[in-house]
Length: 352
Ligand SMILES: [Mn+2]
Image 1 (cartoon, rainbow, N blue to C red):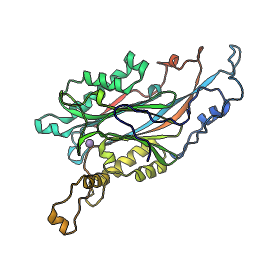
Image 2: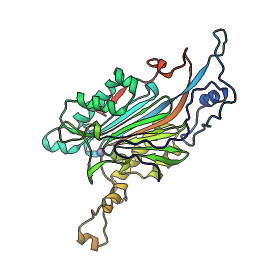
Image 3: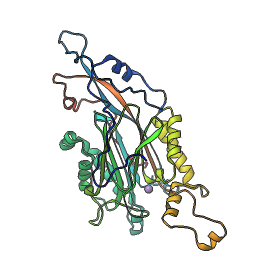
């Protein structure tokens, strides 16, 4: 088993730091190379330096540089077959600025019975999360749990949603805050080496951030962090992904995909295919049986069992950890780079 997060606050034992500040030419060459596939990382852990860092001279053409971790992010959303016209109730955003951040919210569909559009809450929560990235407190702390607190407080729509927020620090540490059953896995060298556990009240009733006082808050979030290396792949999604696809399938698709965009699309499409397949023994149906759910006894006598995919909105985010070489400022503090990063603008997507 891979390490799993403990509620409410746990830190997995980190592998060796991969993104130490450095100006060694071998690492710079490594960073400049581009992997052709999403398969095993090419990163070699830096060996201990045998000589002190080169001090930059203002007259020297050689500028000191360091490596920073960034995310290359691909996303794909396929709405529930019956909700295609409205875009479904999942929402997400991804932003590669300042290392990288992404988030997914899955609007709880039960609100439709109360004449509330379940998509409104999840979309507003994601819009607010994206907006608060520029908040001063967030820029300093880069804490996904604080981002969740602020975004939730600013959300006025009625409804509830499961939510996951992940933020990568330039050192390569991925910080995660999750409420409910959105999932996140890290794949390294063709293996799932990290996975977060879902939180639920009971089967099919996940923890959820809500407009109502009875719901969960940022304080209930599962909070953890994992140290990543160049080449690591993060696969995150709403439950519509992980209820319909097995880890082996995820690993296989990742190894065959030429890039993060193709991987996200392929994962979403396979999950979608399984979700509408009544003969597929999905992770969801296996979990249901393990909890004691089954077909009626008279069908059981006829040899039937509870199987099939689970139709749902399917959101997939695939992110690959890369490194970039940045010149070191006077003082060389990463924080001084703040605000200078180039990257894609934040996008809030809800497939409208
Ligand atoms: Mn869902």
